[in-house]
Length: 116
Image (cartoon, rainbow, N blue to C red; front, side):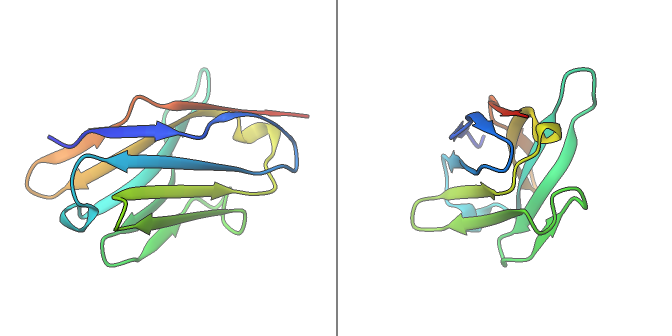
């Protein structure tokens, strides 16, 4: 069982930046893929960015060039740096950990609101 705790959400004006953090209860090197997903009201949960424990990252086209996912193995934490935020980035952001042997785990989510 992997426990994930997100932080860093909040209210920001369009064009601003936020950094989300996701602290994992076990060493991230033991987790095959870490990711950030988001869900806006009335929409399905969608992938934002993922990163493997080898450091390979992948981004949704809507955030590519604006968001950066990174890992701090010493802190067992995954970050999502979000720049040039847009109102359409408003959503609850969820951290995900995927282990091939045991499946996926989710955090409780953190709200990001971007005002125009």
